[in-house]
Length: 289
Image (cartoon, rainbow, N blue to C red; front, side, top):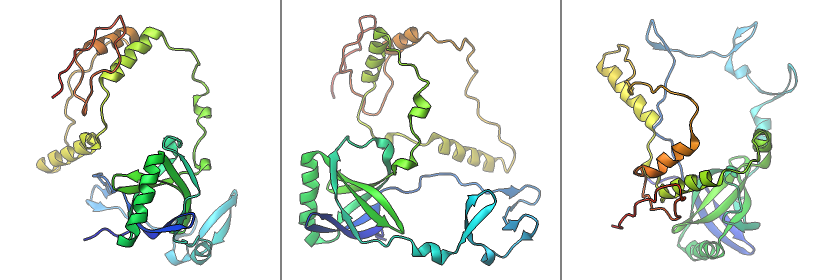
């Protein structure tokens, strides 16, 4: 069954309009869902809508309320809320262009794939895609989808393009309130060189397929063991004896040991691009395959 478009409309650049379709680029991961169970009976726990001092109530009597002061609410019904929802104009007008690295990654929220709506739209779609690629720019605009207005970015991705919704500025906590207690001291030069060498040795091209959700895999294994044990309690598997020692770590010794030890197998790891510090052993050269 073909995927259903999340949004259909047009991208507008000045007087040029390009019909497009937008599809969600993500899907739910292999998460493990749990339900609350009443242990004596083994049956699921259900919830009732209750009001303090009254008890269970009819769901039809429920409205949405905004608390404008402690214990006082403005009541709104679904029709009133629906009346102020933004109607999609089915148009994304690109009003600004920024450098590819001109947006802090913390603003990016959710990605969507963008494709031309039909063969007639393909030529203009390709022109816009390649123009963004050549200029090394990201297009910015605002788009109404499903009753809400989003700030979005648009950039090339392979043969298509990716649209990403962006968080509004007031949705982010200001970093300064968390970072202000961190000192401004400069790092030791030799420590910095050692750390840089270690980073270079473990650098490589990112491949998301190389990474697995180990927590979900462990939960699945636990459930399997539980089923094999017919409901008996399963003790966690031992990881080996816990290491004993001081919590104080000699950073210099730890970094030197890390640099001197063989590099771990990382996804598509590359050899170091920078020379190691004088105090560190030079990394062994690797022959290209």
